Length: 161
Ligand code: HEC
Image (cartoon, rainbow, N blue to C red; front, side, top):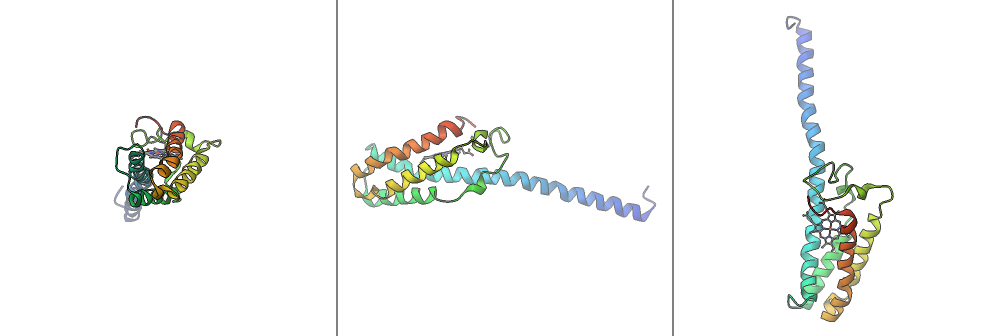
């Protein structure tokens, strides 16, 4: 079998091709993992900024005008990033059980996740426009932000990984 040098060369190149093919499959798989991590990082930022604003509104943290204005402005900025590339097909919690809580319904043709995201953008922009103007002003707009988080999570985020 290996006494024909041409044939041996062919077998070697087939072997090389299969060695190259394996990492390229792994890279595709990893691209989905990275995208999931990226969007979760975005939500961690939401939580970091909004969490302190919720705490100020509830009186659990001292209201600070400058900090409130910055947190709300940052929340609004992050909400306006176009992170569409992080929502790859097959990155839902069925295809990637254990890695993500994103439900497959997000990708359904009748999904209204875009409207949910828009509600969060609007609510955070409205909050950012008043958050530095006193605790009452903050309180008047923070409720819609909380509702916008919940409105999306209720439909599109699973309770557990
Ligand atoms: C348009 C829909 C949508 C909106 C609006 C939204 N979320 Fe989420 N959120 C999700 C989805 C889907 C996940 C699951 C992501 C995943 O696991 O891949 C998630 C995950 C999270 C996580 C967990 C991230 C992690 O590390 O696993 C936190 C925290 C979070 N959201 C906070 C918030 C807060 C706070 C708000 C409002 C200020 C908010 N989200 C608004 C859809 C949304």
